[in-house]
Length: 349
Length: 256
Ligand SMILES: Nc1ncnc2c1ncn2[C@@H]1O[C@H](COP(=O)(O)OP(=O)(O)OP(=O)(O)O)[C@@H](O)[C@H]1O
Ligand SMILES: [Mg+2]
Image 1 (cartoon, rainbow over the protein chains, first blue to last red):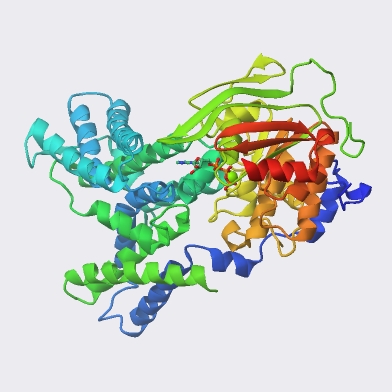
Image 2: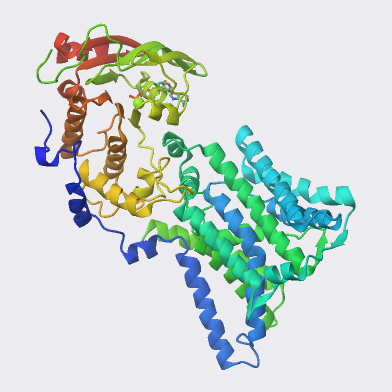
């Protein structure tokens, strides 16, 4: 027959001895290959570069630039989770090739629901679950509407951003605030300090680790990447793209609710007025962190570093007594620079 | 029977391994398939031939469960079979190499190989070590393509032929009863093409039937036991290799 394979290496009946041969032939990718292919490379360079500059400036001119002041560092760590937690969920969804702008409203409304339920003497765990359930339903609605009707999720969730934003004021009145005073241990566990390190920051790292495990070590993550990278191929491989994306929409919403819970716990108050631009900062963090706007590409460490870089720039602006709008300028520049660098790195190495 | 191509269609009268009856599928005004009957016997390689746009890939995708026909019935060993999704078709024993390769460029070779069929523990976490070892074996066994040094490389960094080889290796590894190959050698070198042709023969003899879509009639004539010629969404002829010749087949394809 036409086969060129000798009996000993018959491909169809290949036995276990093959593995030894395979191990000699193929190896894990080299460190350089991994670094070069890693989507978080550019943001890591930007973050650690700026961090080094801040440390040097803090050492050289401590009286003008109090970066290394422990109070400043603690504050910095406290700020990172704010947008960071929202960005984690948005990032997971972005990897499946979809957007979620409604997180800005879920961040406000889901925790407000928790506070309302708690104020009505519903036990705290159940009150929190109610808030998460509402968030999950919003995520589900985002996903079903987007996928069933083939609408860009950018549009669906932009609509949802406005709808959800008005829902709480609609029900309870605009600019209402509500005390949220859970037991002190609860507050301490979520927003206390562990030595000089704010608990929120530790929780943020825990959530990032969970995201990493989902994305890189769980079959769901494999489906996320496939559904975002090439939905057709994913479907041909037997992956249910619809439910994969729905799961990501729900996760995104739930992460925003979790971020909101940390916020109301820290402030001991839940408010109905919107926190503007959280959703855009979340997307910005993801893009700066090296996630592709088209899906299928990205790493959790990029989101973490993106969130950290954003707050680091914020901190520099405050310490250097620059006008606040410099932050927006920097974010804008970093988004564009980040995307361009990612594009260059992917095309040529 | 032709000695060279083995023992197709063992028991006369017995139901075929897989059968599709009366398949119709239209896209808007385009009738991609009209009342097509098609079957695959045991131990056989079926050549699916026909002009561009004849409906070959549409039929392959229907059998693979990724396109749902407007009409049609399926039978496995004579019993009704459900292939209304990729997973169900896979459960019915069907594996496919698609014409457009169908790999995710941004994912590694390893993650592509296991996409949709990840080995996991009870909690759904991936068995990474097993995945890596198996994917190295898969790359090593079926198509030792030049230039692939690691299963961790992203597929988008591969050449067209290398990517096609990965798709072939993946499907051959997970094959069960039937392997559908839609122009599997279109991007391959001569050497690799020979290998794939050889694999098809070996598979047929070891009990895995193949459906081989190709425009290369010489390749088809070398490995197929039977030919099905399609034209304009219809199956116009099914003929055993013993009962035809290269010239007759060429005429059949050209005149329809
Ligand atoms: N998703 C689709 N949407 C619309 N029309 C389609 C679609 N898929 C296939 N067709 C049409 O159905 C017909 C059959 O296409 P098919 O891909 O099955 O042909 P083929 O025999 O595989 O051709 P080739 O040899 O060029 O691969 C063509 O006219 C094609 O344009
Ligand atoms: Mg085709």
